[in-house]
Length: 74
Image (cartoon, rainbow, N blue to C red; front, side):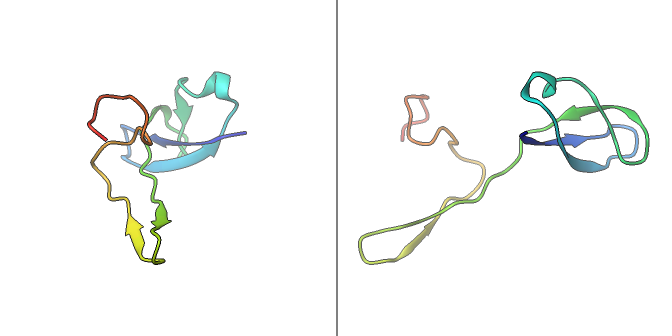
């Protein structure tokens, strides 16, 4: 089961929960019991290595398409 991140608009709590993919877009209940938390896009960090074993970090805020034809120019 995938892990999804949600944010509660009432108490502003951000939390993660395991849910089936078919329920990913459905509102969740936060740990404090408030209904209506909505799914947010999670940031993912990744590290790749070049030919000389130098590390390249992928920073947040840019293209997240992973090199596909998404139109972000990478």
